[in-house]
Image 1 (cartoon, rainbow, N blue to C red):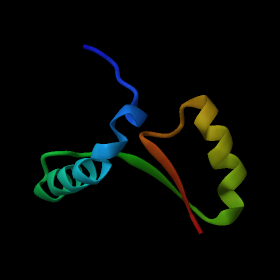
Image 2 (image 1 turned 30 degrees about the vertical axis):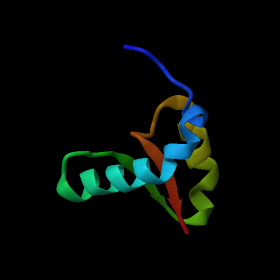
Image 3 (image 1 turned 30 degrees about the horizontal axis):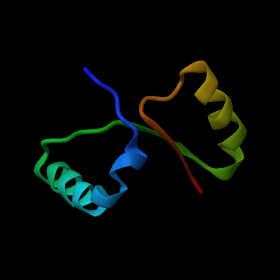
Length: 62
């Protein structure tokens, strides 16, 4: 396994977004996210980031 810096591939961003979008549509790429409802829950969501209460991306839906 080898890491990389995303910025080194900025010339390929459009191509990457198109391919990743296609894989999501086809079900080949799956993701998880935590959605919190309500602007008033913003502090709780923010603190949850530091305690591991989220799975994947943390989203606050207002």
